Image 1: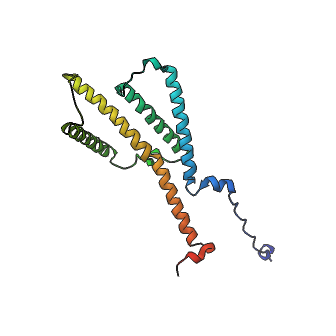
Image 2: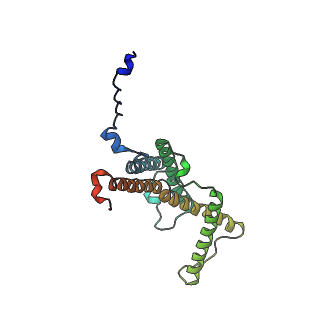
Image 3: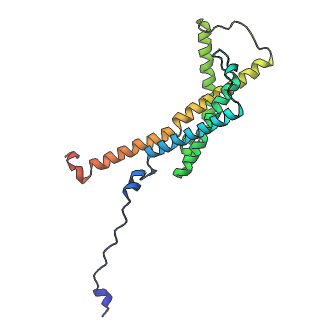
Length: 209
């Protein structure tokens, strides 16, 4: 007789339950959305502070050279938009490595990226041109003299076009890139939790008859 057949079946070994700390920081989709946003904001603040420190070392601020005017130069505009844009791109890339997700999910997805980019660029030029034309025709914008001639007009326009392109990229990718993805993931997780809670045994009285 096989004595092994007479042995009672072994009880299954219960799987190790995640600790409270693990459940606090890690959910079904990895690092929870709230903590992801905090890490993103902290990294972005650190990168921007480091960039500002380096810029002050390279170009020390001279209060006596400050002009009493609100005019923004092209150089100041390009630098002021390029540094935050590079910082957002860098921190988003770091978060993609932390969360082990492709960088394309944070606003760069889709199969028609180039077509959408040039369509948005064209609409931006058209809308800004209509705005300037409307302000000029209504007298809210006054052009008192002509400072550029010939090829300088085209060169000046292209450089400012690039400057406003940086403005658009920064605003769109900052607001609709990683932040929007994390908020969407957080809301989806909340609704999933609410749905599971509604139909759980602990809150069965919420379930409609």
